[in-house]
Image (cartoon, rainbow, N blue to C red):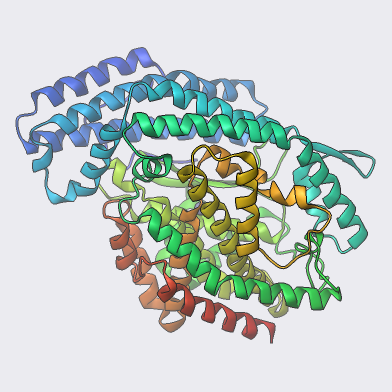
Length: 570
Ligand SMILES: [Zn+2]
């Protein structure tokens, strides 16, 4: 990594140890005193610049520690440094930061800040309004229970192929052509999950009780209303989400069922069973896009350069400053992510490339997030240099779609078509599942006191409404508990619909690029450059996209996806 600060520090000492709370205390004392002294809106603006500088430095320190740890999880020093941030620095910072926010909101000059600070002001006011001292211990309890969920699910293994297997590894068997083997693997996993079903129901009931208590203490009628405020969803309501579910039911579910019917026909089956849903219906071997991660980097450079020289330049920053760690190796944390070094104001991409198509998708996706960080880097307020998830994922999911026509850099014509088809099918299939998970939570948190049987019945009715036509007979218990697999329901309630909202933006961007690519890219970059400085509808509008999740947007988009799938099948 070769980075330097984007702007010189004006407030924070250059050499301060940002992981030492004894050194941080005087910095926060000083920020508090300066806030007390503020005698005009201009003073507050000056204060915000200092505070922003401190926030950026702290965020970068935390990101660097996290990156170091995930790049080598078997190094005890790195683990220790990371745990120090989580267990010592963050818990110390939270109340100090909140005290500053409260003071800021109470300042008589707060409402006189220029319009530029409108979005920030709205966010601070909300945080202060919903904060309750008594909820802090409840939240700690929730976090502990959520960790229990991870522990219970992480400990699930089955014996298969003569050895103990994780469920993630078992999932891969679902892509193999041997049907009896898929069936046996699927059944083994379903049985294993059911063993812990009661434990998870019990855990969820505890979470439910705590969450309802948090909402009531903060003065909200239910946890849904509380969460919409807590997530700062200023620009859409629960009712909008319910309408979104309906639009998916009417315009996406029929398409997913058509695709399933095609799958059934291709596989030559009378009826699909739950273990027939992940295998390639044409029985093709997996795609093999590259051998070395250097090749992945090089070919993506070509793709982005071809798409737009500005994107090519952005991508080159990652390469030149060595802001990537791509290869899978022993000791590295799983998965992929993009992180931002907030003081250097540059992105970092982490992944575990092994030469499969998923790696290409991950790179294109994370590159979209990286472009977002670079496009917004000149904004003066740290809080504005990142955007709400509903728009962040437009940057990344949109980039997957914009780059798709250039997959020829990795594949033959035939394989590129297959990759694009799989991608579009995956997008379509996501919507009904998202609606199922989201609608379930809307019901749960607006029906306090429901019984477990009522909860299961509700889930099953949603599976009927949004699910496929595969035959579950003989596995009714497993079907009633499928939601236990979705960690969001346990750990980050109501957090999932964001991906659906963003995907609609991404699909609109894709359509715009087919009409006029240079104009679509101009809009895309203009939207990204706003960071989080404007409300969601404006971020969408600037990018040339409608912030709308009704039939009006979804119906025509699904028509286009269907056309594209037919084109790619030809
Ligand atoms: Zn993402």
